[in-house]
Length: 184
Ligand SMILES: [Zn+2]
Image 1 (tube, helix red, strand yellow):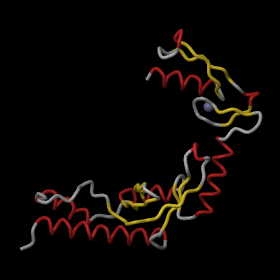
Image 2 (cartoon, rainbow, N blue to C red; image 1 turned 45 degrees about the horizontal axis):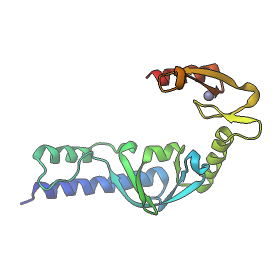
Image 3 (cartoon, rainbow, N blue to C red; image 1 turned 180 degrees about the vertical axis):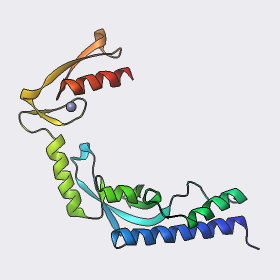
Image 4 (cartoon, helix red, strand yellow; image 1 turned 30 degrees about the vertical axis):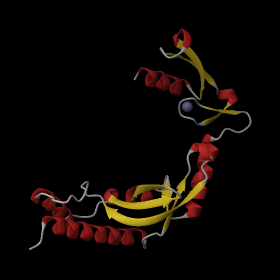
C-alpha cells in the first residue's frame, strides 16, 4: 500500500524533474552557478552563487502525514503547465543561501546566468546611482543627480525636530513622494 507521504514525495519529485526540464527548455541547460548584482552598499559588484538544487514551489512542506487533499493538490500540479515563477533555484554563497525564481532569472535585472550580462547591468546601475563629482544622491529615488538640478524639499513629519527637515531631491516630484512616504 502506498502511503500519503510516499504519494506526496513522488508528486514532489515529478514536479522537480518537470521544473528542471522546463528550465533546460528555457535556458538550454541547468546552470551550475548564477551571477547577482550586489546591493548599493557593495557598489553593485557582481557576485557568484552556486546552484544547489532546483525545486518546484508547491507552497507546501512535506509533512509526516499529509492529508488526502494536500496530496491531491500536489498531484494536480503535476498535470498542469509549469509556471516559471514557481521554478526555484536554490543557490548559496559562503554561509548565505536564497531562492531565485526562474522568472526573475529570465528578467535579468538582478540575477543572470551570464557574468558579462551582470557586469554590464552593474555598470548601468553605477552610472545611474553612484554620484560623481558635481552630483548628489536624490533622497527619495537615490538617482545620481547634477548639483545644478538640486531641488531642496521640506519634509514635515513628527520624527524631525520642529517637525520639519530639508533634504536634497532630483525633483519636486520626488520631494512630494517622500512627503507622502512620511505620512504613510
Ligand atoms: Zn529622485
